[in-house]
Amino acid sequence: ADFQCPFCGKFFKETYAKIIDNYVKTGRVLFVNQDFAFLGPESQDAAEAARCANDQGKYAEYHDRLYNFIWNNYYAKGENGENVGAFSKDNLKKFAADLKLDTGKFNTCLENGMHTIAVQESTSSGRMFGVSGTPAFFINGELVTGALPFVEFQRVIESKLKKN
Image 1: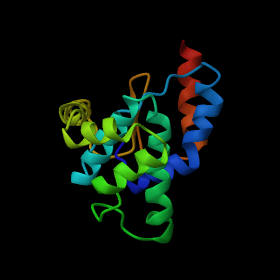
Image 2: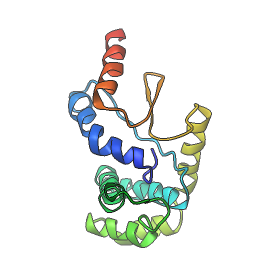
Image 3: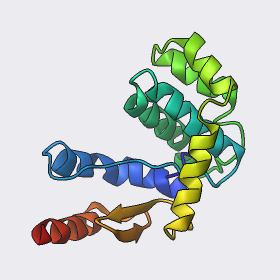
């Protein structure tokens, strides 16, 4: 996923919670988010910031904050949110403060690029596995792309679960 991707935002707003509630919370599916920060510098910074939040055990909250912010302030209004300051370092730091993270640790992590290489490697790995855009999902090895409705994910997931 790329935090700036409008289709990732659509998936987050319409489908993500249903997959979490129906499959992850029931222990039937493991959902792992991988960075595919390909839309520019703010994608890279946002992915790094989410990892800095993860260092403090707040990845999920920060992840949700990023998607809700860009969706509510840009995409829901029909505006472009890519590399326009939505995920400026100042905003990323403000989100950390809003979530009551240790801002000293967070800011040092973000400014020192502690996760730069990891995000770049995640993006490169995605490319090696055939990802060319976001959102992209691997469901037991099957590549599924796009902000598809829940019923489409449900169909693929259920077919994979029946095989196990």
